[in-house]
Each structure stands twice: as structure tokens, then as C-alpha cells.
Image 1 (cartoon, rainbow, N blue to C red):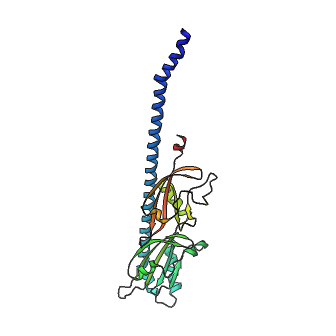
Image 2 (cartoon, rainbow, N blue to C red; image 1 turned 135 degrees about the vertical axis):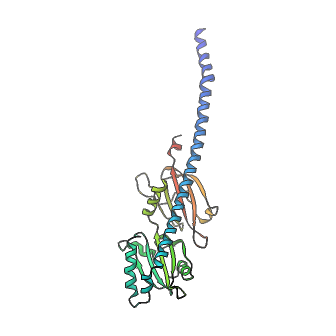
Length: 280
């Protein structure tokens, strides 16, 4: 009789103690997982918002550089001289030392390049030189300052322009254009500030740069499967997903980057790694 009672007691113990505890534990794990997913989504959205603000700050800084250079009397006085290109180039070179990551260009009022200062050690910068027909020059010659995103043969760039004005003469003497190419180094600097992986994509011909690396520590050579495949996907302004990238889980948020005509020309994203979700 005593022996037959033991299985019954064990069964009662399991039903009364173990099963409720197990159910309680599983429910708590589900709640914790949901809360962590929500927190990670919030983190990716906050990182993306900070990254976007950094780009806006940089655009404003570039506008200030262009305005400062356009107002220099040393440049205005030399624009009409016979050796204008040589003289102005020396002025721009001196200023470029303070802004080494930018390309600084001066165009006359016929859109002809007068001088250009850039890091000549970087051969790839040739592909980011401003096209004379770019809207950024037209805006300056129309007496408007402008900063915006452009897609160039070498990649994605931010350009700012300002008219060079002589107070006694109109139209403007020319235009100053400041260009910042987006490079892996640029994104790495943003990553360190937002504490999330940052990606910039454009053109959808596998054109992108990212701080995300594979398991071997090599930057991704291809976009992940669920990355936006068209600008139309971004018309809603903002997207969030749970993604598997390079065999690692991420909470990722996307936002469009628009040009002066409000057309989407690129997509910025921030990704927060979410290994804890996988473990749960």
C-alpha cells in the first residue's frame, strides 16, 4: 500500500507544484522575450534617429564652410585676375587643411571650375567632383544656399553650395561647393557615436556601405535578404524589422534620404544586435 501511494504523491506534486511553476516560467520567458524585442526595436529606432541627426549636423556644418569661403575677400579679389586658378587654389588649399575630409570647389558664373582643393592622396575622389550641371551649382547662382544628397559614379555624397557675391555686382561671381563623400570611415565614425551598426544603400545595384561584418570580421559584400529592394518600400518614411544578417540576429530600422526635390535617393539604417533573443 505504501509503495502504490508514492507514484500518486509524485503525480500530485508534479501537478500542484511543478506544472504551475513550469507554466509560470514559460509565461515569464515569453513576456521577457516580447519586452526585449520591444526594447531592441526602440534602441534601433533611437540609434537611427541619432544617425540621421548626425548627418543633418554635418550638412549644416558644410553649409557653414561654404558660406565662410564664399565670403572671403581674398577669393573674390582674385576671381577676375589672369592667374585666378593658381591664386585661388592656394587659398582653398590653406582652408582645406581645416576640413581634410571634404572636397572644396569654386565655379565661376558660367559654371566653369576655377579651383579645387582635396586630398590628392585619395585617387577615388575624382569620381566625386561636382558636375557643372548639378543643381547644387544652379541653386548657388540663383542666390540660394543648398545642401543635399547626390548619387555619383563613385558613390553617395552630401554637397553644400553658396553663392560668391560681390556687394556691388549682380549676378553672383560664382559658387562655392563643398562635398563630403560617404566612405566606410564616415560610417564607422557614426557607428561609434550611435553604438549600432550603420548601413547606407543607394541605386539598388548592390550599391551600399556598411559597418556590419561577417563572422570572420570582413565587411559584408552583399546586402541581406530582407533589405529594402526599392525606394517604393520606403514611402512610408520608416521601417523596422527583426533580421538575420551574416548569421546573426539584429533589430534594424530604416529611413529614406531625400534630395532637394524630395525624391528618395538613399536609405540609412541602424541595426542593434539581438543575440539575447536567440538564446531565449
